[in-house]
Length: 206
Image (cartoon, rainbow, N blue to C red; front, side, top):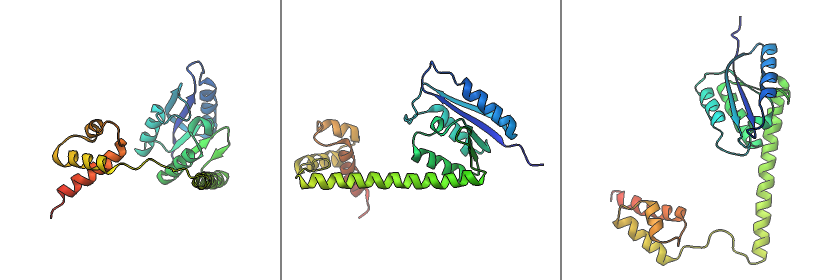
């Protein structure tokens, strides 16, 4: 007799006033009907779907990676994923780990032929979205070039570069401290690039 899939529920409500009761009830009824054993429940409250730091979702993903569950059950895609890309990345990881993913309201189960077909469609949509974004960026850059506008960050002056190089070479100041020393005349990222280059060159054997 096959083992009953160890299942985790994931729920999210956008405000503290909203209650996850509808999601809980629906998921529990579905799990009972589908023969799934609920062994964990994760609910993020008052967290936007677009916000990166969802602690309960992070905890769920850690548990999945530790092979604690065989199945993840959600009410709807938009309760789980921030975007098409996020959904695709999660589904790819679940697939790699052999974890089943079910979205009740979307009627998607990755163990079913329809679920696998939907995964292919989602991947195609994500690729299309990426291509459209690239096209818009490219068109914007071409339009700006025609108008004579310079895109990207302004170049760092040779004098500032030399100052950063000297600080990196003769002091043990951190990148944050060097950035503070030059009073914002270059971005912290640029300071880090220069300082790491100088210190790597100094540490390389002759």
